[in-house]
Length: 118
Image (tube, rainbow, N blue to C red):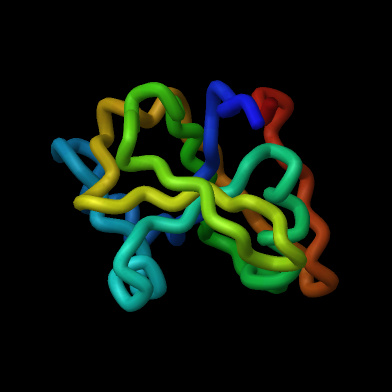
């Protein structure tokens, strides 16, 4: 498997806003609970949003440069054996975030992703 240029973090605006102008983002509550920061690839985003964020607004999608995370980015089997990217060993460096975009997810889990998602 080749590592994609970007992995994506879904966060609430409320959780990410305080980190926006700081060196790092510690993630969401589930990240702290699990001991790593959860990411999705572009191909995994729609299903992640449907399963975990249906009906939510006030979300932000963070496009993170995979190369900036180095060896701390670990690919682990999850849902149905798919490999999901996880960041171990500390918070997400905000310098690794290439761009961000607001997101809202309909009650049925559908969502229009930004055109920049690749």
